[in-house]
Length: 581
Image (tube, rainbow, N blue to C red; front, side, top):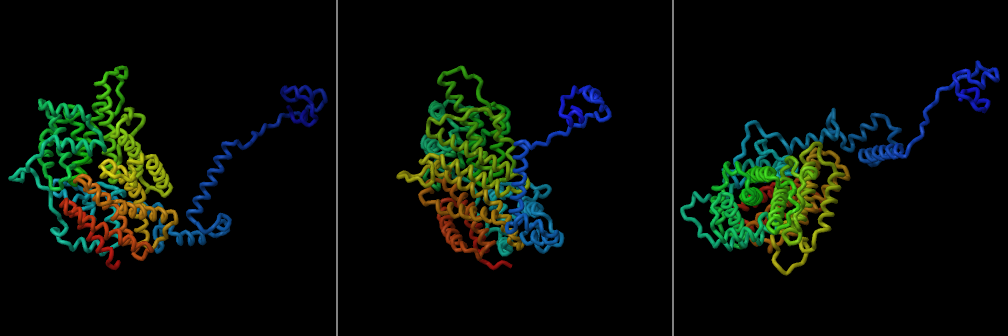
């Protein structure tokens, strides 16, 4: 309608100005069509977006200025706002004339934990497998170490060295032979070979313990092939000897060294030539070697490489995809298909368990769009344990992916991951929970599945413990939400020490795993003592450290290689009691 027809409130014919009505009433000069204005009605979606943006801005202000509201901040000058910001440690350092942002401080902290390896660095675990740099037992603080991130134990030792100069000085003053421990003997160096037990005993031990953690091998098929004794192919001999080596580690005897003989026999059949042909038994042998044995002998980098090779071979064989031959229902085909599933998912779990402590990228270990293989059947106990481990390792992989990225993981992300881990633990069968009462001696699967959960939560909270220790040493204010994460990390460390019991030391493999979980927890408590020696809970931490040292001493009697861990713990504890200079 034209403007004049609107004014008169009559129907306009809409023709070009002047319209017919304006001509009739002889007001052609007043006829024109005004430009329509777009109606600015706020949609429900726009309202929600604006509200969410306002909530985010309000939350940021609360975190930056917890004691001030937006109205009081709006009335302040720029100088007053800067003064309050420096008070809360929003700048890198309170005494810096050109302090950077909080993100800059975090990036600087991360550089302390994740320095680039020096040019030309090469790791040599063959020569010094007792003091590897990945697990921190080498006590090196320079860049001459493998590429590991803020989730590694090495990062804790570097933080202790930064906040406690007495610790660094004590390590540098110790002669090399004081810190060293007995290295693994090699079968070729021994003139007297140990008397080998019956193979059936070792096979029974392996299937009693290893099989219920990672059911890589179809037991009845393996036993039948072993009883037949006619196969002499390298993939089978490599797998057989790795099973015997793992069985040797699972026997009650702590003096049994026969695993060295079987390991040597297995590696004789695992050469570069093995990678030229894909064979399921080769994948299984590599999984046992990289997933268990190399970690037992303190060769984590070698384990990392071998497990990665096993995963690549499994992908080349198509184990990551579900078989398309779904129409076949024969018993043999069903068993083979289930074995392939269990091999893939066992590899997935072995790689996840080891790598979350390294801070290295996962390179797509888990991608639901490309990994289409079904999860294994949970009809038997081993399958049920593996199913729960798969769910756990998917959480672990997400955490590892986040650890490998910058910037540093936030407190909100830590809480979200922690809630996910606790939900997983809630649905864990009672028989697999650490606190479950049982008249029988705990088995390896029962021990590991519970301890890995509490250890993952500990590792998840630990980066904020490290950064808070550094900031506290610089007299920088710690935000309340970060302090909450730090307190939770310390609480988890105490829970770990309290959970470990004497009756868990039932074989060499259990012994080494308990040693590692306990070492992880103690490093958290030692850093806490070094950085906050006047804390109200400091005496509780000291009590647990001293109890752990007794446990380490007891374990070192059974396994001489744990002596190195005991030495590192003792040195750090003595340094933590020295005055900070």
